[in-house]
Amino acid sequence: MAPESSSSSLVEPAEEADTAPAEEVPGAAERVPAEGWSRLTTRRWLQIGVGAALAVLAILGGLGVWVLSHEGAVTDQLVDRQSSALVASIHYEAAMLDQETGVRGYGLSGRSDFLDPYNEGRAQEATALRALRTLSVGPRERADLALVIHRAEIWRAWFADPIVTGKGDAVMRLASERASEGKAEFDALRSAMAAQQQHLAQARADGRADLRTVQTERNAVFAGIAMVILVLAVLVFVGLRRGITVPLERLAADTGQVADGDFGHVITGYGPADLRRLATGVEAMRQRLTEELIFSGEARDQLADQAEDLRRSNAELEQFAYVASHDLQEPLRKVASFSQMLRRRYSEQLDERANQYIDFAIEGANRMQALINDLLQFSRVGRVHVARVDVDLEEVYATTVSTLSITIEEAGARLSHDPLPTVTGDPGQFGLLLQNLLSNAVKFRSPDRTPEIRVTAEQRDDMWHFAVTDNGIGIGPEYAERVFVIFQRLHTRDAYPGTGIGLAMCKKIVEFHGGTIGVDPDHEPGARITFTLPAREGSPEPDEEVEQA
Image 1 (cartoon, one colour):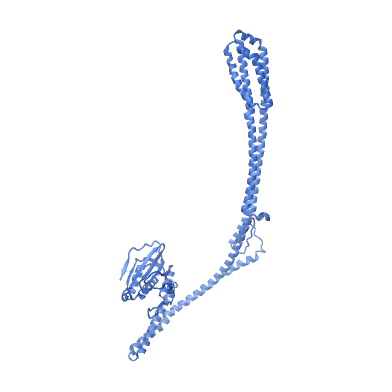
Image 2: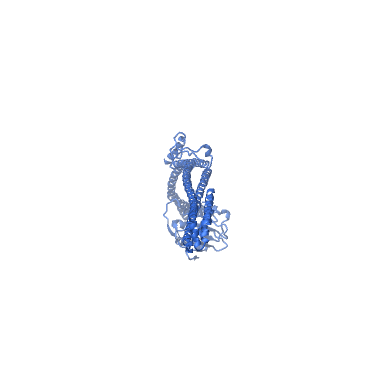
């Protein structure tokens, strides 16, 4: 049988697990971490890896900031000081040339309008001189600036100022007399300015060379940073793979093999401590699952045997029902029939005690027939297949009341009921349910008051809640469960006749239809039997109440 083969397949792989070679899984060839590292948890692995990566990145970031800062300083030195100093020196030279041109023109012509270039040159000279004094910070730069200023003062004192302050013909005569000396002094000034500009140009060239060197160093540093980051990424990837991914892949492969049906495959833990603990837990679960599957296989075998026994028992019960409904009742009918014939024909010839014995025989035969019929009905509930259809409980109630009409009239009972819904089930069994509940309510009436019986129905969510309430002798709370047990009676047969099967049959019918039944222990006087039945989907609630005397 299938269960036996499944059970054997669970045991044999477990016995061969120690000798069978391990199945190749992705990454199985990669070396797992050392034992010392494997004692770390996954979180610790991540903390160490992320911490080391952040530390290296912080160092690389600091190095990159220093390189950029150094490059910025060299760039500022070149742009803001050296180049600006050279530009200021050129402006200073242009201002001195304007002054020399203005002085020479004024000396030759004596016209004051020729002094305009001189005056503009003086203003430009002052601006350029302020810039040079600010930007000249090195010793050679300060020496060059001092020499230029000295030569400019000599030229101005010997040649420019006397001519500019002179008037008339004396200006032209003085300019003519000092032309050679003035030219020599201005040539010396020009030479000083040329030397200054040469030195500044050389300093700017050196600055450009330094900038190129710094940029080369920057590129090398950032290339190194990129290489270190790449190596770091590779190390992190390898570490995570060997420490986390490979153990997870092995665990996934092992669990997948078990999930595919190889319940004998042993799951072994690798990697960090928490992953090994997880693998240990999964292995324990596999062992328990294997034991449960073995047990369930045995249980299926037992269930199959029990199902076969039940099928055979049902067949025997069907045979018994046939025998009970025909073979057993036929002798009882003959006993009752011949006893009645005996009483009719020979009652006058027999004494009173003999007639009483005949009545006992007839009564016993009738009671035995009723008991057999009730037992047959009880055994058919839930066993005989019936089609479930929509049942209008209003019609079932009306039919039941009509069937019990003589009993109701003799008892003088008054019946009322809520509008009853339509439910799904077996109409015959619902008829037995209401007939037993209503007949019990009439039977166990109180002699002190008129019997009043009420049937109520209320829908709550997907269930209908019913109640059959009477004002009879009631049911004690201690008997609330006992009354639904077959053949259990709370009163003698002489006081209240019956077979003791009615409420047990009601319980079986209600539970067969998916509901529950019980006794309301708080209701008094009388008894209240409550039961539930599943509601149909989309069933409307009735909206009228009916009372019947």
